[in-house]
Length: 98
Image 1 (cartoon, rainbow, N blue to C red):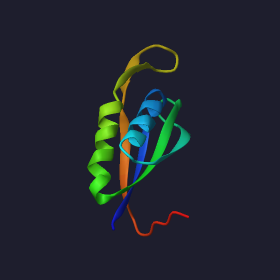
Image 2 (cartoon, helix red, strand yellow):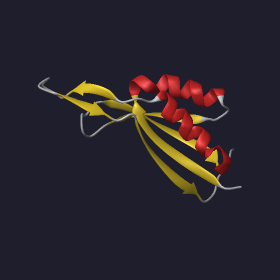
Image 3 (cartoon, rainbow, N blue to C red):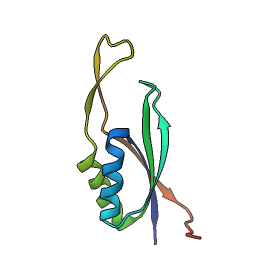
Image 4 (cartoon, helix red, strand yellow):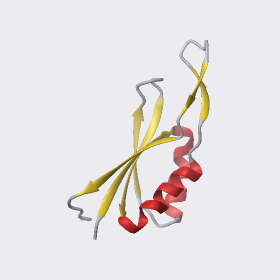
């Protein structure tokens, strides 16, 4: 069995719906609070362990739930489009559920 770890950095506004969607399709995730460097605002980092055959399903959930938004820069002078999600897929050498 080959396992991957998805590290998905998503906007706080999308995190509850994404967690619900992942659970609905039978995937587990660990939710971590994090702060982005560009806008220095809160976001959520999800750690999702999947087997190879579940990878596309997990990515599909992220694509379906997370969306782009316009957000004001600090100081309110202009708006920028912030990303829906940033996802890193990492091969896992060893996995144990204890």
